[in-house]
Amino acid sequence: MILVILPAGAARAEDSLLIWSPAKLSGYAYRLRLGAKAATAAEMSAGVDLAVTASSTGRIRDTRDNARLWAEMRGEGLSGAQRNVTAGYNPLTGRVSASAGLSRRWMATPSFDIVLAPSVSADANMRTGDRGAVRMTQQARIQALPTGTDLVATGSTARGQKRIGAEFGVEQRVFDCLDLGASVRRQDMKLISTVKARLRFAW
Image 1 (tube, one colour):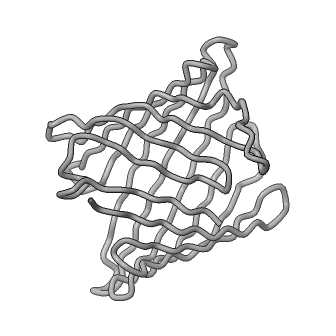
Image 2 (spheres, rainbow, N blue to C red; image 1 turned 90 degrees about the vertical axis):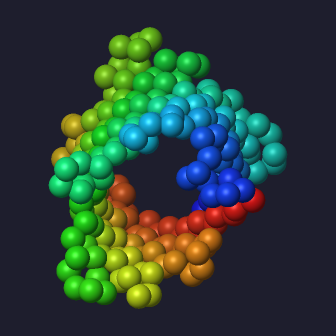
């Protein structure tokens, strides 16, 4: 089970120009995101992610992923589609990453919305010259607005891979501060199930 805690600012997180977001990524992995937002029409932000991973005995693991610089820009196109571009750099390993995505929403009925979100991502190592991988993802989401329930289907493929990964899940908003989700994905010809909880605080 994965628990992610997202704190917000005193007035509301979106009203603050500072970013301070600790998260528990897994049983023994934690991340603290620090950064700032630009006071512009386009939503631009940048900062650093500080992460630590421990073994089951509590010993800190040397993963060389302890620090990562990141930048992000979001905006809305003329058609109403939401766009986002992100970039990251790990100064310890020399690995860079980038992604770009688009999200379009349609009203199927007054109670149901359909959201399509294609994206592409790539990474490379500036020190070794490794070009890494290019991955393309397509996500479709059916949202039941009265109940806060989402049905999610995701397909992904990467350069050099013949198989297409697939994941199906359901997400439920229990309270304004709590989301629950469960999914099943195919990985290496096996089915893997995941349960997630997303919790937000405001102070």
